[in-house]
Length: 202
Image 1 (cartoon, one colour):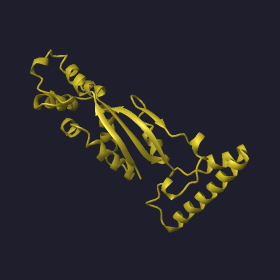
Image 2: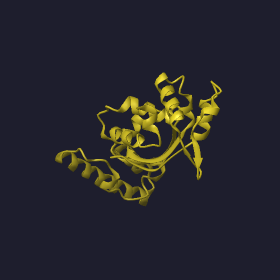
Image 3: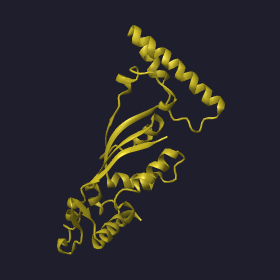
Image 4: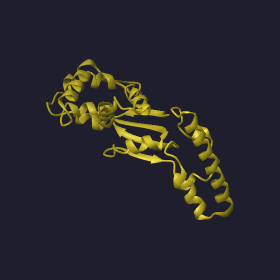
């Protein structure tokens, strides 16, 4: 399971201006601003695509277009996402500080591929976790807290607010498109909906 909310992209204006610096070609830029929104022209989009195809050393403009979003995904996906650390900032809901503050239920976990026996095991684990949560809230015994932290499955869904660039997004699309995890496939589909992303990378 993965859910993306509050998806925003910005920075096109200065990225386009900078993209045209090497050849002093600002005069032929055909993008325009309407009601505070940048409409990228055909010439600028064609140059973006050409620079993208030329490789990372030529497509520096993509590092100047920024994306922000809230992502809710299981810990097993976040472990892989953490590969993308350069130029990526993420603020997460704290498992260490907040896991004991509410009773857990099935909606807190990703479980769509579990068979019946494994699903029953997950339900047993959630039940055990809730026993430990209730006990910790009564006793504040650190042993009970450790039971929660070390028993928590990687299917637990965590929310993070993430900021990255179009370069990060393009790298994810390039590297994860054929991944076995559904979460990557869905996330890439979402990244492809970003303004002008398909025109730049396709």
